[in-house]
Image 1 (cartoon, rainbow, N blue to C red):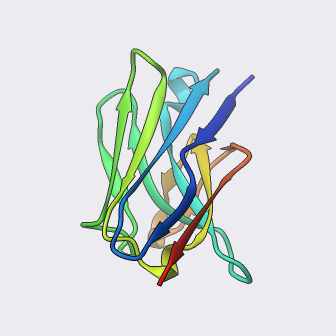
Image 2 (cartoon, rainbow, N blue to C red):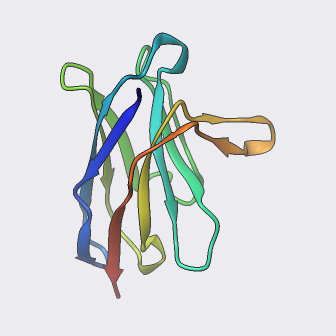
Amino acid sequence: EVQLVESGGGLVQAGGSLRLSCAASGLTRDADTIGWFRQAPGKEREGISCISISDGTTAYADSVKGRFTISTDNAKNTVYLQMSSLKAKDTAVYYCAGDCEVGPGGTWHANYWGQGTQVTVSS
């Protein structure tokens, strides 16, 4: 059974930084990517970053590229999302996502989800 538990959300001022963590268990070699999606009020859930646990390959949405960094600590089975230069429009519930991928046409997809953690950026 795949379990994903996020932590690290909170309230931060615009321009500030925040780091999210996701403790993962149960992912297999056939589903060895993990990442982050987010959902703002009134909007659809969007994929923002994904990393391969096996080779470290990363993907970022254009909306966060250059500001957010995804990384893993394989010894701790944990994935991190370092968020910098935060903007009010980054306010959303952030979800850890297992077995994520960016499909044809740039469509993001994942098969496993954490419970979500709220990030609020005040302007």
